[in-house]
Length: 304
Image 1 (cartoon, rainbow, N blue to C red):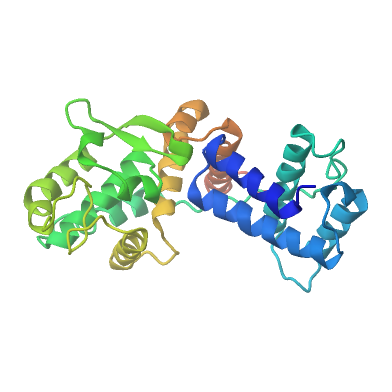
Image 2: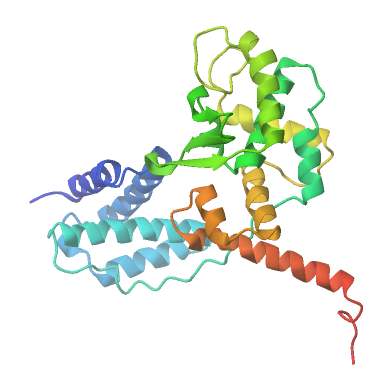
């Protein structure tokens, strides 16, 4: 009889090989299922066929307990991992029934991404524009690139020289699950990149590397260093709200939609697998429209 541990390992292998999930996603699945396995061991359950609806419902109740202090989003993710495992078990004919089908899940409220105004965003990305510092030239290019392409920070720091096409004014981004997409890139970002590539990167490139963004030692720029660069620029631009590389991705999507772009075009540019993920930005723009209306329309605040 196959152990639950071995079955979980097989499921994770399936996600890695067949689904080609990113490492961070796989790590999240692994942590979630390790927690689930610990719960099963506490109940002395060592055979997947012994897991019934009551077992998984009680697990949900345990996760939701205030003793654990888990956010609703974390609970939903953990339960999604458990559901995926049990669906796989049915598919592999380890069991005949899926005990998670009757799990009652409360829908997590949509979290509106925090986007800066257009003026704030321009102030942020241009705050280092005139600096002659080698690292500032790099950071200016990074800021313009993030806002111009809507790329994830992992896509930006993983960018290689061959991914850039100046002639076509486009860039090839390597997204989640090994998927690639080509997105356009505007003149402002191309100008910032040209300045960095010509005047800064040759000095930073103390070792052979084809990565676009390099640190002071010539190695590929790390995610944390990119986060620090964006946070520093926000401070210099006197932006009070928390700003991260992902903020520029939110700004990219929100400003495109506010400018009239179709949501499915924005979906392709962001590399979202489903348009449902992109549609959260339409909530942002709708909220912004309501705010403008409330301030601008002469009768918006009028009462009877």
